[in-house]
Amino acid sequence: MDSYGLLIDFSACIGCKACMKACKEANNLPGDPGDHLSYSDYTVVKQQGDVFYRQMCMHCLTPTCVSVCPVGAMAKSPEGAITYDGSKCFGCRYCMVACPFSIPKYEWNKAVPVVRKCILCYSRIKEGKEPACAWVCPMGATRFGKRDRLLEIAHTRIARWPDRYIDHVFGEQEVGGTSVLMISPIAFSDIGMRNTLPNEPLPNLTWTILRKIPNIVITGGIVVGGVWWVINRRMELEKENSNGKEGKVEK
Picture 1 (cartoon, rainbow, N blue to C red):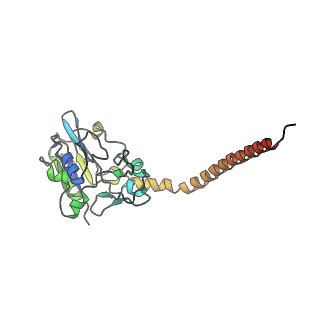
Picture 2 (spheres, rainbow, N blue to C red):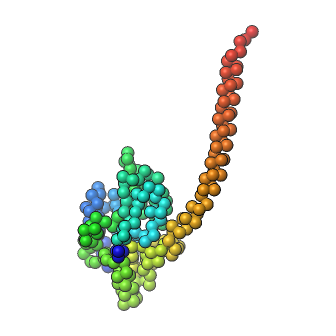
C-alpha cells in the first residue's frame, strides 16, 4: 500500500491556526489552542521572525516509539500514520523517552492517564478523507498525499524558487525518513529542529543496544539480590539481638 503523509510549507503559512482548531475538533480535544504541544494540543503553530511554522508528530517511517512499546499500544499503519491504542497502554512512557522529536505527551493531571499525540487523523484517512489540518488550511501550506509525490513537489518548489527556500526537505532522510515533510525559508535549527539526527532509522540503533541488555539485567539482578540479602540478614540479626535483650531478667 502507498504511504501517505503531509507536506508543510512554512513559506506559505500565515499563522491563522486553523489547523490547530480543526485538530482539536477532529480529536475532541478540550480547551483553546495552546502555544506548545501537550496532551490536548497535537499540533501548534509558532513564529520565528516573519516565518510561521508547525510542530507535530513526524510519523517516522521506522518509528522508535513503536519499536520500544512493550504492549503494542503504538503501531505503524500501512498508510503511514502512527496510531495509538490507549486500552493497551500501561503507562511505561518509553515512547516519550525514545521519540527523537519529543512528541508524545502524558496526561499527568488524570487519575487514569494515557499518552497523547497526533495520529494523522487515521480514521479520516481510512474513509478516504484528508487529515483535518490539511483539509482546513486556507493557503495550502499543509498538503496531504502520497509521500513520493509530496517529495517531488517539495524538490520542485525548492528548485523553482531557490531564494524562497533553504535546500533541505526535513523528513526526507532524518531517522530513516518521516511521513511528515517540511520545507522552509529559514534553517530548521533556527526553529528548534535537531540538526544532529542520523539518517539511519533509530530502531536499528536501539536493537544494537538491546542485544546487550540481557547480560546487564542478569548482572544487575545478582547485585540487587545480594544487596537485598545483606540488608535482610542485618534486619534479622538486629531483631534477634533485640529479642535476646528483652528475654533477660535483671537481677
